[in-house]
Length: 318
Image (cartoon, rainbow, N blue to C red; front, side):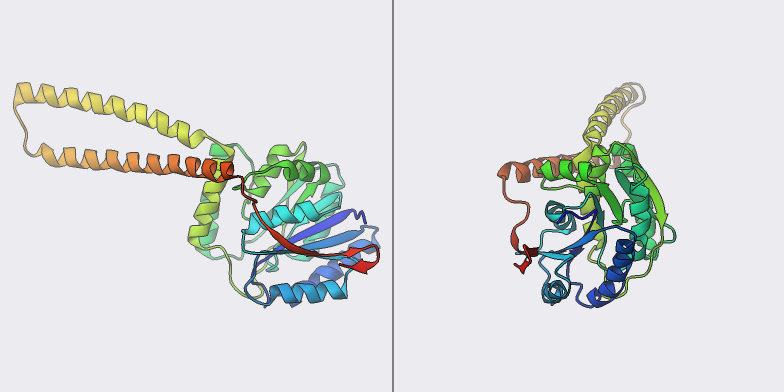
């Protein structure tokens, strides 16, 4: 089976919304099939603790010709699920889609059309975000910081509705990073990337799996995985602060010899010392992020463990 289109959908505790996803996803792709676009759908169950795996297995039995299900033995995260899905795909165009229907499946055709124009990576920008206000503002702020640090131009990094060419997928499949951000990784490999505007809807059921802490961790993965600029910035900051500290010492010595000691200045010194300690601790924490990622990488452990794959082979269900 060598379809033109593969759709990769990571699933984690989505039992409440999978039925609605099926109701819209398969008809949307069947319409594309009428236009000559053969397809497959690869669901990756990321260690769901609800009935998601059972519901996915039922759907595989209903549509084994176009459905494949990768089952993890535990929870490894959305991006690891996407990477596992990439390894299981056969299509020339691979599209990632969240299971919560915030990205309408009907938009898949627009990405396919754009890819057929010769692009090998098509990102998407949400026309009107339906997320909470704090998520929208935080995402925009992190987008600006990320672009300055990594030089990766992704307008809407939180939107996972994206299309990848087979050349990009093959390169991604060769990578072995333990911590990564798939759209950024694809952007570094793409020869001709572009973006289009797509619709965005409210989540149909359940709640977001990304907490405030998870979003911070994700952005740390993105920034430390694609740039050493944060370390360089702290190196330069250290030099500047050292120079300023030396100048302050000289100024205090001159003041002491010519004007005498100033008791009131003690609190100023405390404030400066606390500021310096805060900068040092933050720098140590940043260095720890890089060292921690190196530690995880050199351990050489599998990034994820596939329990089984439900797929049809040679006319039989496996």
